[in-house]
Length: 253
Ligand code: GTP
Image (cartoon, rainbow, N blue to C red):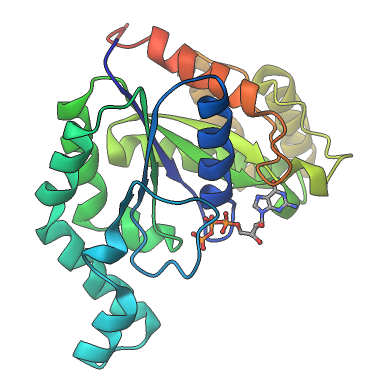
């Protein structure tokens, strides 16, 4: 088996870095070799020691100083600079002798996703290993109602379209909302979401319901792992999900 590459994408603060740390620890405890990549040039501190740290190539603070930019401008400029040096990064990933490569993406998801870096990286990773996937990290503590959940799962599909990598949602920070009504079973959860949206009766609710129906029709997996990256809980479920994606590798049916 070649290496399995997992890219962690998600809104700022959803727990990408903490999940990379927890998953790397879990994999290593099972004797797997893991190569971790920090792709966030603006990361302050990380809960893991990256094998490859983009800050050694582009540091957003230095970029801010050099170009006289504010935090957002510096991040955008940093993304451009990282894109220019992408080959340097991907050749290190290609050379890494590891069973798993975990890629932690920038906190400001939109700055990453809506720029060339995201699809170029995904393209390069697919070239390195056909077993390249993405995990879309959702923050369970920001889900207020069924429509929120539907919105977030739909976003995971949008990420998949953008990256061209099979992308699965993962529900993190479950420790903060032990009574969250989401079971992690998409069929069951979408049934509930669908009913709630029908009751809400707006045209948007109807639209979302249709979208969910289509998503479910084409979704091979119905399990959404519920994890706590901070407490290291549910990591085996995340791993099972990665293995499942890996099993369907090359299956385009
Ligand atoms: P940025 O890249 O900086 O946007 O953040 P991120 O998505 O990498 O999130 P990060 O891992 O930095 O976590 C953000 C905050 O959420 C930190 O204070 C973490 O300790 C906390 N956090 C992450 N995962 C969990 C979790 O499972 N439970 C709880 N309670 N807190 C968590």
